[in-house]
Length: 391
Image (cartoon, rainbow, N blue to C red):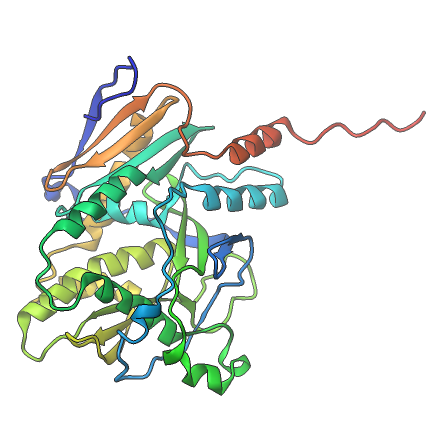
């Protein structure tokens, strides 16, 4: 139980993850994710309510050294707590355009739902989130203090790989730079495509998709970064978009069962992340131990759960269990977070339950921005009365 501030007294409720048998069987109907708005961060990580940072996929060249350019990496400093601000800002702009509130019952980043959905099979790392109830909707953010403390703890652990962990993390961003263009192939110069290996790698610019979806009964609004688009946007809003998720992974050596098992376990997060935003295709860049790009494999998101369950697989996870668990947990969360204040959603590493406790009796902490609350008040009041016509 998290120690509450001042004299406020709170009790903790727990949702049991195990036994997993309770989550087995066919999963409930899942609402197909539909993008209803979006936003971009530019090269300085400044917010824009448009698609200027959307990228198009074009294959990287095999044999490329993914470490090249590491010394010039233009890395975004995420030491500051960004809360849900950009997501809420985009929702408010959409609501202003439509003239009504979105019907979501839970609003959060895709990353938070990924942690929850993976809980039955991922217990090595814990998590902490902050939540608040406002106008019948639960808003959930990552607990930034916990995130930073976990990162510090991880950096203090012994690292036995001869390649620094920071460089290995860079490989994923390098693969994205090698695999994307700022426009369609026909509008991108040959010089740009062939010169991608020389481009400065940066993770500041992002395109973020915001979707309406659902796992179980609650209607979810999720925001998350998408790496690229395969072709072009559909003509009509709400139709499926051919997004592409880009991942890197260690190459699977022939006959090496351990390599295959490690990759199949990675597929759990690959699948959940893409499933939640409606990303149909994942391009995996396989690399050597030294970071040389040795292969690229296209994986259809919808086929991953069956791959994990095929005879002989050592993946050790079940997609239906993930969906059933997430549906059960989100419905329980709606019953549990039933009053004002700030709530803490926490799973300790290795524990078999997720705890929820109220840590502040009133207010919304910094989960909701003043700008968003003021917008919702304005929306609830309705348009100002028009001047009466002269009689």
